[in-house]
Length: 290
Image: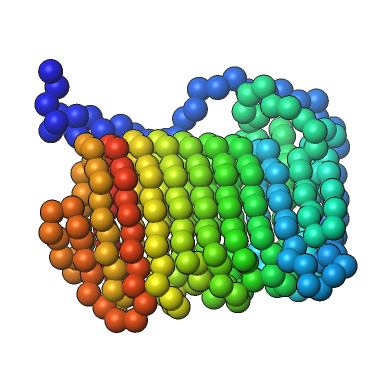
């Protein structure tokens, strides 16, 4: 029988390999390419100013870039593609708006490396209150949400390489931030600025960085559920935080001023309190403060 220490070593080695190269052995989807088209996307706010917009972005594969826009429209930007079936489809019904990557069904993961296939969205979002849902597959994401007014945020993706940042405060209180991902590399920065009451993060076999920099404006609770993963949690100096860990074979590394009592880790500070519950089956959990 393999001992617990040996299983930890095996898990760590697997995660080290994962962090260097994320490979998913699935068949590639082949498309018929054509000329590269750049299409303008412009969507107005709901007619009633009292309605909170519900914006859904259904992005199959490619490159997705989101940033704050001018504020005059709910969404403004461009979609660039060279496969006709990837032409974006916009559907609006009252305060609900959905932008999707056509009606194409993927039988595998398309190879967007190089210049063969092109599917790029570059959107600016307005500053009026909205619920934002991002559903994506195998993609590269560069998403800046600071300075928006997000009442809620949910991201669901697959084999992704994503950076989401709140470089400035969310202008309204966010009830819940949810993130569900698979074999991905995900970095979330400026999370204190998101101004959420509760955050739920669920990951599979991936590498995840959760950086709670920014200004924590109220008590917040974070629930992290990860499998064979490398999870890094960063909390700024001066923020009072508590991390409670339920771990199977996971290894926990501490850098900074954390005080440890069993699987309970505390960071002294003032102001609102950050409580983080971590359930990790195997791999690495790193706690840092700076």
